[in-house]
Image (cartoon, rainbow, N blue to C red):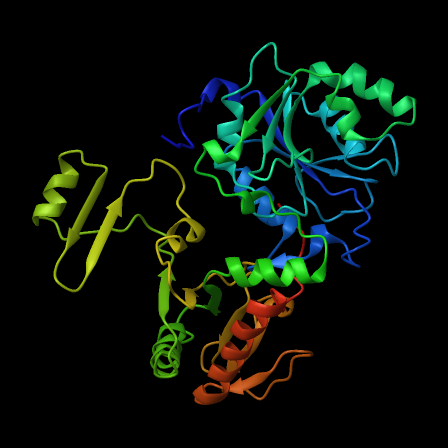
Length: 381
């Protein structure tokens, strides 16, 4: 039976650092691939967010000056302009773990689940765990490498031989055939050209996540109600996520589901003919991205609040409450207000002009599906 869990070994995972390779020149793409965006995140962010659920993450760059806004661990190439081998060498030299799970930044579909699966093949007599696609192509730039390989890597780099294939001929390699797993070949897709990027965005576009933000009592919920009604009339499927600063009570005390939770159940589901609800104790910090995964098939997920987040947002500014915007203008799709105010580069729309606000949201959703996120978000971990 095909499985992505059968080889999972938590002990092995703890010996691995996820190494995002971002030191390439991106010649065919024509722009830095690590900073390209999907769903409001750069490629590097997307991989860091995903792989960071399981592994410590390190960014490999050509120089330390390439990504000054990166807030996580970073390592620069010692050997310059030598391709992925230089990044793998730098990562293994400084990662502090026995292995690195090297992931090229132009493979934003790689998941932590794939990394965990590959970790199951680690052993003392394996230097490289190498995925193999169904057409027989080997994935050199998405693979696990052991620090035991460092002397050979150093030797090869000093000799001026930068081919990963040549290195693998000297190492003990465990090839993992994706045909024997639940993982599709597309999980390893490299996006090298604008055409590759457009196709990936079309294939993977999930719901657009847009925050409706503002200070307390500014009217966020009232505006959301109007937007949801109008956008639903235009054919959009919409969900809403709201953050509660307190640990909310998910069910009324005394009901059956509440009694079962009090008895110790960590997950409870309830459904009727037309609706269902799942309440789950995660055992870890919950966040909006975990919850958003429950809303497959939506076109838009509105987030109420999140004023200090990097999400694209509509800020509600009501004169009777506050006349000063609080959100980063670089993240604003629009300012919805009854104030006389101007904000450079940001459309200012009257609170009651729901038609224009819906048009802005609809344009953003369409642009995102074809061009990625339309806001210039920072590269942060």
